[in-house]
Amino acid sequence: MSTIISSASGNIADEAGPTNSLESANEPESKDLPAVENRLGVALVGLGTYSEEQLAPALLETAYCRLAGVVSGNPEKREQWRLRYHLAENNVYGYDNFDDIAANRDIDIVYVVLPNSMHAEYVIRAARAGKHVICEKPMATSVDDCRRMIEACREARVKLSIGYRLHFDPFNQEIMRLGQSKIFGAVNRIVAKHGMEVGSKDQWRLNKELAGGGPLMDLGIYCVQGALYTIGELPVAVNAKFLPKKDKDKFSDVEEGIEWEMEFPSGAKALCQCSYSEEGDLLRGEAARGWFELQPAYAYDGLKGKTTEGLIMISSINQQAAQMDDFALCVQNNTPTRVPGEMGLRDVQILYAIYDSAETGERVELHLDAFQKLIEI
Image (cartoon, rainbow, N blue to C red; front, side, top):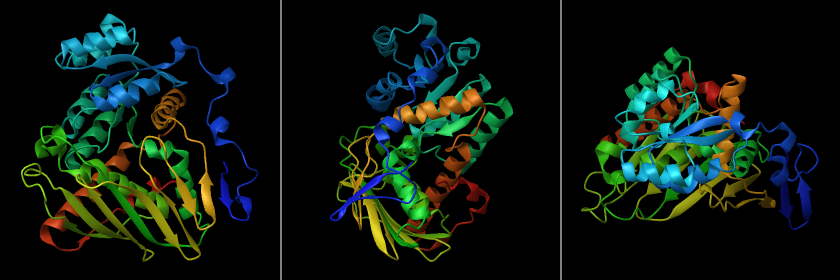
């Protein structure tokens, strides 16, 4: 699918072919859509802000799946969701009776949207219940947990996907194309920054036991992902350091910020930074004959891009709806997901190598050859 790059000299279509409207091209044709009752049922496990403000609304827009159930430890919240989304009473679960979901034929996919340290338990329980699984990022808080999750899904013969919504976003897909196809020549430098004001100290993201770490786990994973799919290579080493803590009370348990450098086989480097106290939202590739970037790059909407030639003109889509529809089609057609558990495992290995480097002050080598097929365009 092509995009339009607007430059001072006019509209320049890329080499992929004639220009198209991504806005219409990303919408499934109505004649191909299954009836609502034939769409795959999704149960959201964890009814926090992301489920409430992003996933549930997205499931009202999806073409191949629908919101069929919810799981929460809060009885009042369960009832509110049941009424709001007209859910069947037997499709609403607590954590204590979650395993009963195995007998529910109305639910095909379980989406785990819990604090990071709880991902492994509920992915494994969902798999044992015979349900396909989407797990929010980061996949888990240890490499061993990632492996256990993958194995549980393999044994149960269910599919496992990681909630990497940006792989389905047309702006980030264009960055993949520009970098990996070397439209401006070989990429030699990547800059990736992601940061936000995290807010109150009384939240699970600042609890290391629940989150596994601070902004690196939550935001830095976008920078890692962005760098990899921009250049189409796997890093061979990382160098990292923690940024100074300006609020030692709020960040007593996790880092406030961290910066790191990733080295790639081609000699290219990615300079990355994430923070819970400073705003940032950039993915930039610098190549032999030009540059290209998104800013903002990782937001749910409002992404903007430009290159040496001018603006990247692309229509936005609902990222979460596209992500969930893609997985539903993978389940229906028995095809692989482009964001499998192995990709989550790869990225958790990179994250903990970054922590290791920051803690020791030493360069840490990575050996990721087993994941080479997970670089996509």
